[in-house]
Amino acid sequence: GAVVSQHPSRVICKSGTSVKIECRSLDFQATTMFWYRQFPKQSLMLMATSNEGSKATYEQGVEKDKFLINHASLTLSTLTVTSAHPEDSSFYICSARDRGGSSGNTIYFGEGSWLTVV
Amino acid sequence: DAKTTQPPSMDCAEGRAANLPCNHSTISGNEYVYWYRQIHSQGPQYIIHGLKNNETNEMASLIITEDRKSSTLILPHATLRDTAVYYCIVRAGGTSYGKLTFGQGTILTVHP
Image (cartoon, rainbow over all chains, first blue to last red; front, side):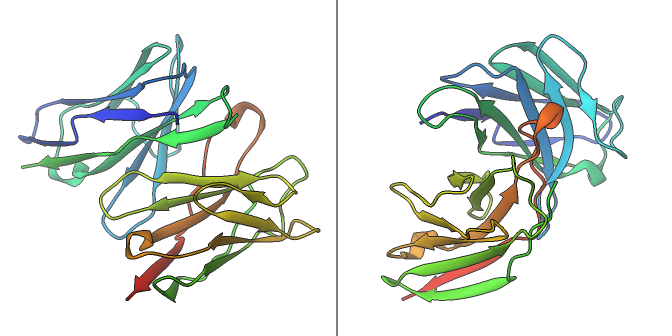
């Protein structure tokens, strides 16, 4: 079936630095990808919609200058957490929609990336 | 998006069927019902989706009531590895196609 892959799966960075997380659709093209954040014992919260070739759309309350999203190709979206602080420590998850194939219009999720800011 | 309501937790004995209910009384005619599950520290895994007909795949069956206001996910022979949080989601259409709103889900615990 369709696969969405994230890298890195775990990352530790120092406070004040930036960290990039990649999301790839491995066997389908995704014009739209989505980025979520999940804090411990909470549900997933949508942060932004990543659109290939155009600017991302951010959910209310999400700082676009802090969470930079780039969707430069049909198979890759990146999320960069800039000037990271300990409160940004979280589980970041991406998803992508597979419009083709036998599953048709199914949304698949990556494995998630654990970010720890120290 | 139509809101969904799920019980916060359920238990099931290994080898028995797990029936997870979901209410979505405000669902619109063009909205699908999707089920995902999330095992601890992993990304959500797609299980099944449907519009109005019952659906079955290698993982589960989805039963949608005729009025589409509720559905049930059935895991026919639950195993310990099926212990997870199960999310019932009604998917938005139009320009936000693919955007999913997650509730709290149902924590399913399968015990020996």
